[in-house]
Length: 127
Image (cartoon, rainbow, N blue to C red; front, side, top):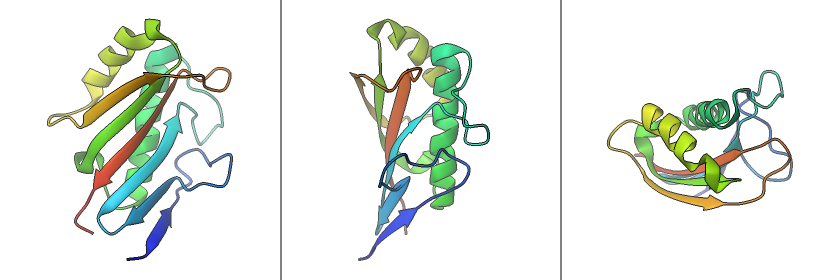
């Protein structure tokens, strides 16, 4: 099985030598997406809520480029910069993620200045 790199102009370009996503067989790993609008190159407004919405839009764009959707996602890894953001993040996340929800892990990390949320995704498709 060949490993295939996936990319789209509809999500932020990687800042180093990595793919926006990689598919091998039916497994699709989407690299961590942050709250940057690909069209403007700017960090989304409205703090954690705005960035969470933008991150999920970026994930959906990369998934779509791979012929997948959030319905194919089995695992999300969420990276937050501050434990105080957990409730606000969950409120936005819960409003946007449909059932059956993927499994999820949340960890607290340092991200580049201004970025509050990063999420990566593991999807399984029929391809």
